[in-house]
Image (cartoon, rainbow, N blue to C red; front, top):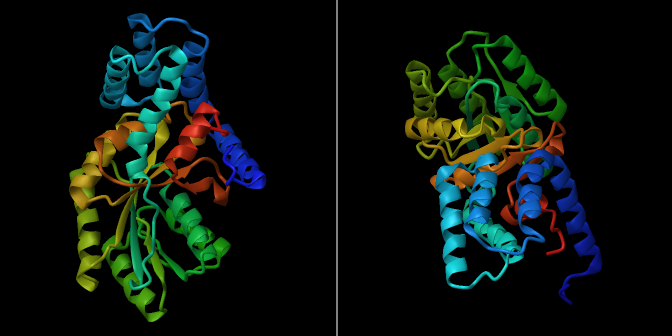
Length: 321
Protein backbone atom coordinates (compact mmCIF):
# COMPACT_ATOMS: atom_id res chain seq x y z
CA UNK A 1 0.00 0.00 0.00
CA UNK A 2 1.31 3.45 -0.86
CA UNK A 3 2.42 5.57 2.11
CA UNK A 4 0.33 8.43 0.71
CA UNK A 5 -2.91 6.42 0.86
CA UNK A 6 -4.62 6.68 4.27
CA UNK A 7 -5.89 3.37 5.64
CA UNK A 8 -9.42 4.77 5.98
CA UNK A 9 -9.46 5.83 2.31
CA UNK A 10 -8.17 2.42 1.25
CA UNK A 11 -10.84 0.65 3.28
CA UNK A 12 -13.54 2.92 1.84
CA UNK A 13 -12.36 2.21 -1.70
CA UNK A 14 -12.26 -1.54 -1.04
CA UNK A 15 -15.80 -1.34 0.31
CA UNK A 16 -16.95 0.51 -2.81
CA UNK A 17 -15.41 -2.12 -5.09
CA UNK A 18 -17.00 -4.89 -3.01
CA UNK A 19 -20.48 -3.33 -3.18
CA UNK A 20 -20.22 -2.71 -6.92
CA UNK A 21 -18.91 -6.24 -7.41
CA UNK A 22 -22.02 -7.58 -5.68
CA UNK A 23 -24.22 -5.53 -8.01
CA UNK A 24 -22.31 -6.87 -11.02
CA UNK A 25 -22.48 -10.43 -9.70
CA UNK A 26 -23.55 -12.25 -12.86
CA UNK A 27 -20.93 -10.60 -15.08
CA UNK A 28 -18.27 -10.98 -12.38
CA UNK A 29 -19.10 -14.70 -12.23
CA UNK A 30 -18.88 -15.17 -16.01
CA UNK A 31 -15.90 -12.90 -16.65
CA UNK A 32 -13.79 -12.27 -13.56
CA UNK A 33 -14.32 -15.64 -11.91
CA UNK A 34 -14.31 -17.43 -15.24
CA UNK A 35 -10.91 -16.00 -16.15
CA UNK A 36 -9.61 -16.57 -12.64
CA UNK A 37 -10.62 -20.23 -12.69
CA UNK A 38 -9.01 -20.64 -16.09
CA UNK A 39 -5.75 -18.80 -15.45
CA UNK A 40 -4.87 -18.78 -11.77
CA UNK A 41 -2.95 -21.89 -10.83
CA UNK A 42 -2.51 -23.03 -14.42
CA UNK A 43 1.05 -23.80 -15.47
CA UNK A 44 1.23 -23.56 -19.25
CA UNK A 45 0.66 -20.85 -21.80
CA UNK A 46 -0.55 -22.66 -24.89
CA UNK A 47 -3.09 -22.36 -27.72
CA UNK A 48 -5.72 -24.29 -25.78
CA UNK A 49 -5.58 -21.69 -23.04
CA UNK A 50 -5.94 -18.86 -25.55
CA UNK A 51 -8.94 -20.58 -27.14
CA UNK A 52 -10.62 -20.99 -23.76
CA UNK A 53 -9.80 -17.39 -22.94
CA UNK A 54 -11.47 -16.26 -26.16
CA UNK A 55 -14.59 -18.28 -25.33
CA UNK A 56 -14.94 -16.60 -21.92
CA UNK A 57 -14.62 -13.09 -23.38
CA UNK A 58 -17.22 -13.84 -26.05
CA UNK A 59 -19.60 -15.40 -23.50
CA UNK A 60 -19.45 -12.15 -21.49
CA UNK A 61 -20.63 -10.38 -24.67
CA UNK A 62 -17.47 -8.41 -25.38
CA UNK A 63 -18.08 -9.06 -29.06
CA UNK A 64 -15.74 -10.27 -31.78
CA UNK A 65 -13.94 -6.95 -32.34
CA UNK A 66 -12.91 -6.36 -28.73
CA UNK A 67 -12.20 -10.03 -28.08
CA UNK A 68 -9.90 -10.37 -31.10
CA UNK A 69 -8.15 -7.14 -30.10
CA UNK A 70 -7.46 -8.44 -26.58
CA UNK A 71 -6.42 -11.95 -27.69
CA UNK A 72 -4.11 -10.50 -30.35
CA UNK A 73 -2.37 -8.26 -27.80
CA UNK A 74 -2.03 -11.11 -25.30
CA UNK A 75 -0.66 -13.45 -28.00
CA UNK A 76 1.95 -10.89 -29.06
CA UNK A 77 3.05 -10.30 -25.46
CA UNK A 78 3.44 -14.05 -24.94
CA UNK A 79 5.50 -14.31 -28.14
CA UNK A 80 7.75 -11.48 -26.91
CA UNK A 81 8.17 -13.26 -23.54
CA UNK A 82 6.53 -10.32 -21.79
CA UNK A 83 4.08 -12.67 -20.08
CA UNK A 84 5.71 -15.58 -18.33
CA UNK A 85 2.74 -17.45 -16.87
CA UNK A 86 -1.08 -17.57 -16.83
CA UNK A 87 -1.28 -15.36 -13.75
CA UNK A 88 0.53 -12.62 -15.67
CA UNK A 89 -2.05 -13.06 -18.44
CA UNK A 90 -4.82 -12.54 -15.86
CA UNK A 91 -3.30 -9.18 -14.91
CA UNK A 92 -2.60 -8.28 -18.54
CA UNK A 93 -6.26 -8.77 -19.50
CA UNK A 94 -7.30 -6.29 -16.83
CA UNK A 95 -4.80 -3.81 -18.26
CA UNK A 96 -6.17 -4.35 -21.78
CA UNK A 97 -9.70 -3.70 -20.52
CA UNK A 98 -8.56 -0.55 -18.77
CA UNK A 99 -6.94 0.77 -21.95
CA UNK A 100 -10.18 0.21 -23.87
CA UNK A 101 -12.54 1.62 -21.24
CA UNK A 102 -10.60 4.58 -19.78
CA UNK A 103 -11.03 6.84 -22.84
CA UNK A 104 -14.82 6.44 -22.51
CA UNK A 105 -14.77 7.52 -18.86
CA UNK A 106 -16.03 11.08 -19.28
CA UNK A 107 -18.47 12.24 -16.59
CA UNK A 108 -21.45 14.41 -17.43
CA UNK A 109 -20.62 18.02 -16.61
CA UNK A 110 -22.97 20.99 -16.65
CA UNK A 111 -20.97 24.11 -17.58
CA UNK A 112 -21.76 27.18 -15.49
CA UNK A 113 -22.09 29.36 -18.59
CA UNK A 114 -24.89 27.30 -20.21
CA UNK A 115 -28.41 27.85 -18.86
CA UNK A 116 -30.57 25.96 -19.26
CA UNK A 117 -28.38 22.96 -20.04
CA UNK A 118 -30.66 20.77 -22.17
CA UNK A 119 -30.43 16.98 -22.09
CA UNK A 120 -32.47 14.92 -24.56
CA UNK A 121 -32.96 11.30 -23.48
CA UNK A 122 -33.45 8.69 -26.23
CA UNK A 123 -33.61 4.91 -26.53
CA UNK A 124 -35.75 1.94 -27.48
CA UNK A 125 -38.72 0.71 -25.46
CA UNK A 126 -38.14 -0.77 -22.04
CA UNK A 127 -34.52 0.19 -21.45
CA UNK A 128 -35.27 2.38 -18.43
CA UNK A 129 -35.13 5.90 -19.89
CA UNK A 130 -37.72 7.45 -17.59
CA UNK A 131 -36.31 5.81 -14.48
CA UNK A 132 -32.82 6.95 -15.48
CA UNK A 133 -34.13 10.51 -15.89
CA UNK A 134 -35.60 10.40 -12.38
CA UNK A 135 -32.33 9.17 -10.88
CA UNK A 136 -30.32 11.70 -12.89
CA UNK A 137 -32.60 14.51 -11.71
CA UNK A 138 -31.98 13.40 -8.13
CA UNK A 139 -28.20 13.40 -8.69
CA UNK A 140 -28.15 16.83 -10.34
CA UNK A 141 -30.39 18.35 -7.67
CA UNK A 142 -28.03 16.99 -5.01
CA UNK A 143 -25.30 18.97 -6.78
CA UNK A 144 -27.30 22.14 -6.11
CA UNK A 145 -28.72 22.53 -9.61
CA UNK A 146 -32.26 23.63 -10.38
CA UNK A 147 -33.72 20.85 -12.52
CA UNK A 148 -36.82 20.62 -14.72
CA UNK A 149 -38.24 17.63 -16.58
CA UNK A 150 -40.26 17.42 -19.79
CA UNK A 151 -42.64 14.52 -20.54
CA UNK A 152 -41.88 14.11 -24.23
CA UNK A 153 -43.13 10.52 -24.28
CA UNK A 154 -46.67 11.46 -25.25
CA UNK A 155 -47.57 8.03 -26.66
CA UNK A 156 -48.21 6.46 -23.26
CA UNK A 157 -50.17 8.07 -20.44
CA UNK A 158 -48.27 5.82 -18.04
CA UNK A 159 -44.98 7.37 -19.16
CA UNK A 160 -46.20 10.89 -18.30
CA UNK A 161 -47.48 9.67 -14.93
CA UNK A 162 -44.20 7.91 -14.21
CA UNK A 163 -42.17 11.03 -14.97
CA UNK A 164 -44.52 13.16 -12.83
CA UNK A 165 -44.01 10.70 -9.96
CA UNK A 166 -40.26 11.16 -10.27
CA UNK A 167 -40.82 14.92 -10.36
CA UNK A 168 -42.83 14.74 -7.14
CA UNK A 169 -40.24 12.48 -5.51
CA UNK A 170 -37.41 14.85 -6.39
CA UNK A 171 -39.49 18.00 -5.94
CA UNK A 172 -38.76 19.22 -9.46
CA UNK A 173 -41.32 20.60 -11.95
CA UNK A 174 -42.47 18.53 -14.92
CA UNK A 175 -43.74 20.07 -18.17
CA UNK A 176 -46.38 17.84 -19.77
CA UNK A 177 -49.25 17.91 -22.23
CA UNK A 178 -52.07 15.48 -22.92
CA UNK A 179 -51.49 11.97 -24.22
CA UNK A 180 -51.01 12.02 -27.99
CA UNK A 181 -49.72 15.60 -28.06
CA UNK A 182 -46.91 16.52 -30.42
CA UNK A 183 -43.66 15.65 -28.65
CA UNK A 184 -41.81 18.49 -30.37
CA UNK A 185 -44.41 20.91 -28.98
CA UNK A 186 -43.76 19.60 -25.48
CA UNK A 187 -40.04 20.15 -26.00
CA UNK A 188 -40.67 23.69 -27.24
CA UNK A 189 -42.83 24.57 -24.23
CA UNK A 190 -40.32 22.98 -21.87
CA UNK A 191 -37.39 25.01 -23.18
CA UNK A 192 -39.38 28.25 -22.93
CA UNK A 193 -40.52 27.35 -19.41
CA UNK A 194 -37.01 26.40 -18.31
CA UNK A 195 -35.78 29.80 -19.45
CA UNK A 196 -38.63 31.62 -17.70
CA UNK A 197 -38.01 29.75 -14.46
CA UNK A 198 -34.21 30.14 -14.67
CA UNK A 199 -33.66 26.39 -14.57
CA UNK A 200 -30.09 25.11 -14.64
CA UNK A 201 -30.89 21.80 -16.33
CA UNK A 202 -33.80 20.60 -18.46
CA UNK A 203 -34.10 16.87 -19.14
CA UNK A 204 -36.46 15.95 -21.98
CA UNK A 205 -37.88 12.43 -22.06
CA UNK A 206 -38.81 10.92 -25.44
CA UNK A 207 -40.94 7.94 -26.36
CA UNK A 208 -39.23 4.60 -26.65
CA UNK A 209 -38.93 3.61 -30.28
CA UNK A 210 -37.31 0.77 -32.13
CA UNK A 211 -34.25 2.04 -33.94
CA UNK A 212 -35.45 0.34 -37.14
CA UNK A 213 -38.69 2.42 -37.36
CA UNK A 214 -37.74 5.20 -39.76
CA UNK A 215 -40.77 7.44 -39.16
CA UNK A 216 -40.34 7.40 -35.39
CA UNK A 217 -36.63 8.09 -35.69
CA UNK A 218 -37.46 11.07 -37.90
CA UNK A 219 -39.66 12.38 -35.09
CA UNK A 220 -36.56 12.46 -32.90
CA UNK A 221 -34.88 14.60 -35.54
CA UNK A 222 -37.87 16.98 -35.38
CA UNK A 223 -37.64 17.26 -31.58
CA UNK A 224 -33.93 17.98 -31.85
CA UNK A 225 -34.56 20.56 -34.58
CA UNK A 226 -37.21 22.39 -32.51
CA UNK A 227 -34.84 22.57 -29.54
CA UNK A 228 -32.03 23.80 -31.76
CA UNK A 229 -34.25 26.52 -33.25
CA UNK A 230 -34.72 27.92 -29.74
CA UNK A 231 -31.06 27.55 -28.79
CA UNK A 232 -28.56 26.93 -31.56
CA UNK A 233 -26.16 25.24 -29.08
CA UNK A 234 -28.79 22.75 -27.90
CA UNK A 235 -29.47 19.96 -27.16
CA UNK A 236 -26.24 20.07 -25.19
CA UNK A 237 -26.37 16.35 -24.48
CA UNK A 238 -28.18 13.62 -26.41
CA UNK A 239 -28.11 10.73 -24.00
CA UNK A 240 -28.84 7.20 -25.20
CA UNK A 241 -29.99 4.66 -22.62
CA UNK A 242 -29.10 1.05 -23.40
CA UNK A 243 -30.13 -2.12 -21.57
CA UNK A 244 -26.98 -4.20 -20.92
CA UNK A 245 -29.07 -7.37 -21.07
CA UNK A 246 -29.68 -6.92 -24.79
CA UNK A 247 -26.03 -7.76 -25.44
CA UNK A 248 -24.81 -7.22 -28.99
CA UNK A 249 -28.15 -5.69 -30.05
CA UNK A 250 -27.08 -2.62 -28.06
CA UNK A 251 -24.41 -1.96 -30.70
CA UNK A 252 -27.04 -1.84 -33.43
CA UNK A 253 -29.21 0.50 -31.37
CA UNK A 254 -26.29 2.82 -30.72
CA UNK A 255 -25.29 2.84 -34.38
CA UNK A 256 -28.80 3.80 -35.53
CA UNK A 257 -29.49 6.46 -32.89
CA UNK A 258 -26.06 7.98 -33.41
CA UNK A 259 -26.65 8.21 -37.15
CA UNK A 260 -30.05 9.87 -36.72
CA UNK A 261 -29.50 12.34 -33.87
CA UNK A 262 -25.82 12.19 -32.90
CA UNK A 263 -25.42 10.53 -29.50
CA UNK A 264 -23.11 12.39 -27.10
CA UNK A 265 -23.36 10.15 -24.03
CA UNK A 266 -24.44 6.64 -23.03
CA UNK A 267 -26.21 5.20 -19.99
CA UNK A 268 -25.88 1.44 -19.64
CA UNK A 269 -28.68 0.16 -17.42
CA UNK A 270 -29.65 -3.15 -15.76
CA UNK A 271 -26.06 -4.33 -15.32
CA UNK A 272 -27.12 -5.93 -12.05
CA UNK A 273 -29.39 -8.43 -13.82
CA UNK A 274 -27.21 -9.75 -16.62
CA UNK A 275 -24.07 -11.76 -17.29
CA UNK A 276 -23.56 -9.71 -20.47
CA UNK A 277 -21.82 -6.76 -18.82
CA UNK A 278 -18.91 -7.22 -21.22
CA UNK A 279 -21.04 -5.34 -23.75
CA UNK A 280 -19.60 -2.14 -22.28
CA UNK A 281 -16.22 -3.21 -23.66
CA UNK A 282 -17.70 -3.88 -27.11
CA UNK A 283 -19.31 -0.43 -27.06
CA UNK A 284 -16.12 1.29 -25.93
CA UNK A 285 -14.07 -0.48 -28.57
CA UNK A 286 -16.40 0.35 -31.47
CA UNK A 287 -17.67 3.86 -30.64
CA UNK A 288 -15.89 7.03 -29.60
CA UNK A 289 -18.78 8.06 -27.33
CA UNK A 290 -18.52 8.59 -23.56
CA UNK A 291 -20.25 6.22 -21.15
CA UNK A 292 -21.78 8.65 -18.66
CA UNK A 293 -23.54 6.34 -16.20
CA UNK A 294 -24.08 2.69 -15.38
CA UNK A 295 -27.26 1.43 -13.73
CA UNK A 296 -26.82 -1.36 -11.17
CA UNK A 297 -30.13 -1.43 -9.30
CA UNK A 298 -33.43 0.22 -8.44
CA UNK A 299 -32.28 2.73 -5.81
CA UNK A 300 -31.50 6.34 -6.71
CA UNK A 301 -27.84 5.87 -5.84
CA UNK A 302 -27.62 2.86 -8.19
CA UNK A 303 -27.16 5.20 -11.15
CA UNK A 304 -23.39 5.61 -10.91
CA UNK A 305 -20.97 7.70 -12.95
CA UNK A 306 -18.94 5.28 -15.02
CA UNK A 307 -15.40 4.84 -13.72
CA UNK A 308 -13.37 2.35 -15.75
CA UNK A 309 -10.93 1.07 -13.15
CA UNK A 310 -13.62 0.87 -10.47
CA UNK A 311 -15.69 -1.22 -12.87
CA UNK A 312 -12.78 -3.53 -13.72
CA UNK A 313 -11.71 -3.95 -10.10
CA UNK A 314 -15.27 -4.83 -9.14
CA UNK A 315 -15.47 -7.48 -11.87
CA UNK A 316 -12.15 -9.07 -11.01
CA UNK A 317 -12.59 -8.75 -7.27
CA UNK A 318 -9.19 -7.17 -6.77
CA UNK A 319 -10.00 -4.01 -4.76
CA UNK A 320 -6.59 -3.83 -3.19
CA UNK A 321 -4.59 -3.74 -6.38
